Image (cartoon, rainbow, N blue to C red; front, side, top):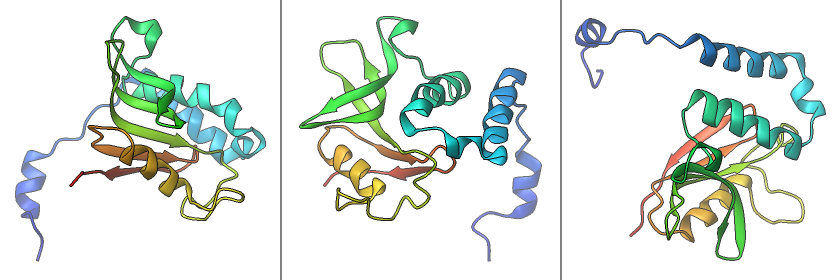
Length: 155
């Protein structure tokens, strides 16, 4: 038995139109994955492109160049470390991190595997950032091919 009636869903759900510029950015990223070029690039070489093309260009977040109040920060400090990207509200007195976003390179094929020299997985690393920042609601982890979104709650 389904949670929702299929006929009701079919009547009410309409396919969304993807803007042409978003589709172009997503197609270009998908082609980089299909061709294998993503594996030849270092993690740090892809961070900026991923943030600009996918996070800002497609998802609509904006960095500090987009105004005094911005919604994505790079290398955001959290206690003794810094997360690759943070989604939230920035530019005011106190940054409000809603979602730490840990990025790994495409050579990190298993986001659940323990990383050499760290004794933790990329998911655990992102989760630690979430536990060390107040107000976090989500945790994101990606290897530039796969993107994971986890709900996060305190208490």
